Length: 78
Image (tube, rainbow, N blue to C red; front, side):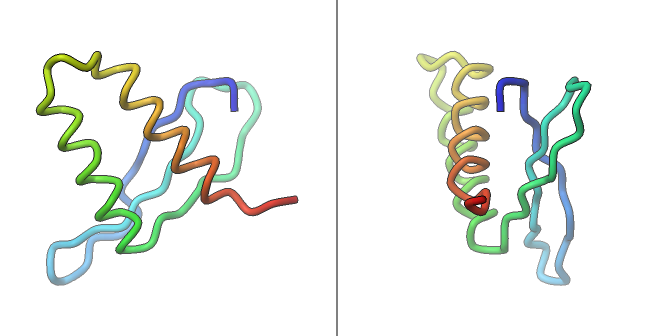
């Protein structure tokens, strides 16, 4: 996972909660998305919210670190 990652909404539930997936962007090689369930998505979004509100942390680098941590943790072992 050397390239940049981004997250996309996969599903919006009736209660307004969502589920997302993380995938690589700008890569020549397609990678499998990593799907987060409702609770994982909630934790993911809350983490990004806290980082976005802390102006002392560079947003772009922090966001990539969180995306990479979730993707690496939730990618099944081969």
